[in-house]
Image (cartoon, rainbow, N blue to C red; front, side, top):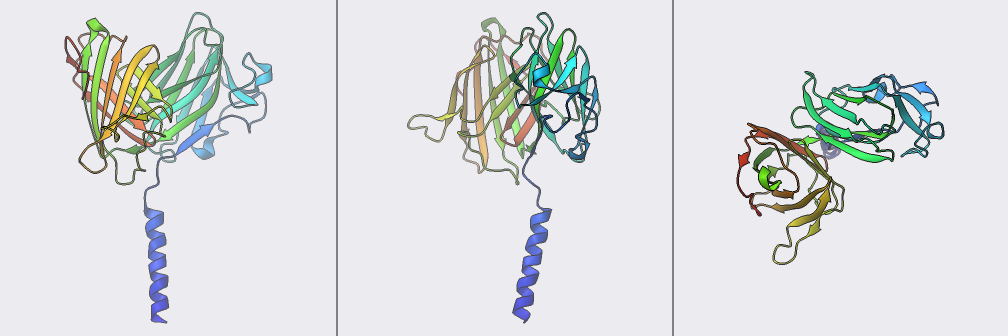
Length: 306
């Protein structure tokens, strides 16, 4: 009898510990498909922590320029207006990145996407170029605090939004970076070392997506982008390719410290401005995220290896 009680107590304790353990990062996605056609978007997603304001209307894509929707049948339609998504940070804790599909009709003016923290400070920004009439995915990763609000500003023409995702990241236990800039050669390099948090999921670069922000440059690599390097560096994962017209070499390898890694990125055909006193840099790989503001090192030639 005492043995049975002990087993029950042990099971009860296990349940309490399991419930109290922090969860892995989560993704909250809005695809607008459960909302009736021709409805203004306001509080329909309040129960999952997102409230919308501005001029967004949910429409069946057959009534728009962008049929089919990226995630049929509906999309969020805006006519030269601002659409704002405000996050309940108690429900969506530590949102470090977001992604969204956007298409627009303007041939002259971009749609600007800006992320703010709780104080109203800009933590990330990107833009949808003019003539982007097909669905393309855009990503933002915070260069500072967690995201509390995202704003879409269309200045000319109509635009559509679909499959908007907010990613709650797990903070890295440590994150350090060094950035090298050679504006005259339109090249840059960065070395980053990081340690996973205690509750982070395992790192598998071969299958996990990576988002890297260096100043105003956004680099988003989908899962499957990295391949194992050749002998004798089989523990190193590498990517060679072009993103946003920037030629890139990116490598990730484990260090001798448990759960710690080194990332190196080399880019050409992208010139950062001169005279920067600091530059924000951030990384999100799977649900792990970290950011820092570093003093860039201006050099004649950037390093070609870590």
